[in-house]
Figure (tube, rainbow, N blue to C red):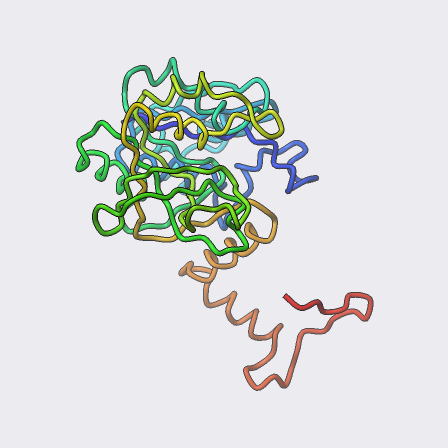
Length: 298
């Protein structure tokens, strides 16, 4: 299975940390975000992974390379395993022209094969890896129609997602008739947002070539998928599991805390620390705040 991982974004919401470090290399607990993504791809059956990078992204390549200075350190065991189970390739997106343009960079590598797409800054935690769920749906639906993962998004987040609508042909499977990229709430045809995991037919590359740039000069994958509807069916499927969007600093921090609380080594220590800092349930002791930093409501 071939998988494409776009990882060329500028990470502007994380400046100044991302001035010289890729957003995809920000750590979540004990490993960078991009490693979780590659792990999902490999655990889903991928043996050929293309990571789309850009300027100042060499750290991503270095992370998956062998480092003789670290030898066979046990903490690198999982990382070494990934490199033996899948071939990892790289191509550069020369200018940041959107997700659709990043996927288009993979056309020569993918060729005529169907392929998975996972975003380089999103972690999916599922008992059955999300990409495998999509691949299984792709096969069950005949192996000739692209499949995208969707989830119900709150009203406040509708304008951050590509939104799909259509007919539910079986539980959790929607035959898509409409796609809208980041609509206003009043214009959204549903609340089903594309979560950033796809299993696509190679026909999408022709549609990407025909898709003009939109807002900010970016080519949107959602717009290309709307064109694809003229040539083949498209399905949206819900999934079992949880998605962690690392789109801004708060979400990244929240994800770190959630992962740490579930970690067998750090979970109990972190809970004890939070209980001490935030006070007992009775509220007798509270964390001390400086007068200059007033508490703001959420």
